[in-house]
Length: 422
Image 1 (cartoon, rainbow, N blue to C red):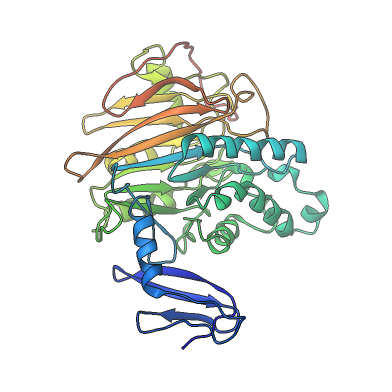
Image 2 (cartoon, rainbow, N blue to C red; image 1 turned 90 degrees about the horizontal axis):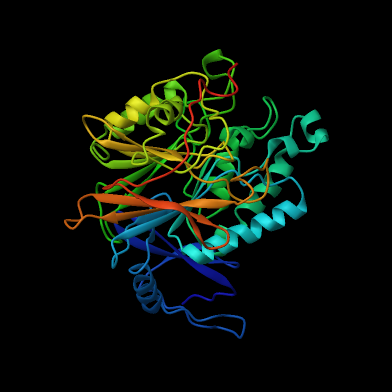
């Protein structure tokens, strides 16, 4: 007989089975089961019904794309009824530049979440603006309190809606070298301070903070190998391999990706990848295919600011079953290029600048977000995906890009090299 003054229920999956816990003020954390009877012993106690708790969870979770994973993280899966998973990608929100901009970005997030009803969100870099951190905290080499305030603000909407989310660091999510928190600490904080965060600590000995993957399972009860995987990598800040210009995904991150993608659990699993700073191939394929309305969808309204060195990520991703790579960083670009290789088709390009922080421009002044819909094949062994840009006014920009067909775009000119290198 348990007396519960106040508390909440939680559950995790162990060995494929749900384990239920009661977190109460008077008794702390305890696991409960059918043999436990929770009855009031005084007017202060509350009553719990274990079997009712189980039945409610099963009924709700069977129709959503969320369960709880082995590390207490949300467990992403395709919807049991529709076979779909919808991802809303926010890029370059740039919180921290003033209350007016932050308030408008709050409203922006709320509008798009309500319009799209996604299963999860990806913050694809520059969620806040490091240059807006107070000079005094930079002077004393510790901006932890400022960061925590920005984190609380940019994650408020997803936490309010209880939406699982992944966070990929952008160059402006990294504070200046030597100023706390560093990228690894940022991701550690995120992963431990929200039950809806999908972030994981970076592997030991690997550069960067946001270096992890999110498995996507066939359905709410599937075990073993996932059907899809979402890769999150950290393109860091600048001076890739010591070369003047923008940062990149380092070689040790790529080695980690290759080892994971070749592992027994993930070998052959189709993946999507999120990296803030564009790969050099983005510019290559714009220049090669930009005039072909069947191969590039979207706009380039500013110079492509890609990594100053090519560390081989695109080649590694192409060879290991990644079918889409999505970037942020350039606020006025949102194009997506279709690249045909001998082994597979891959799309590479941008999301859309989201929210109201950061610099403006033709596209940035009309913020939006990329929507990605993953849908299981008829045999439920693999998936295809489609994507479009959702604007704040509830309209869409450009055509929907489908993995299985070509679409159109307009506007084209050649750019000689990645901006920021010269």
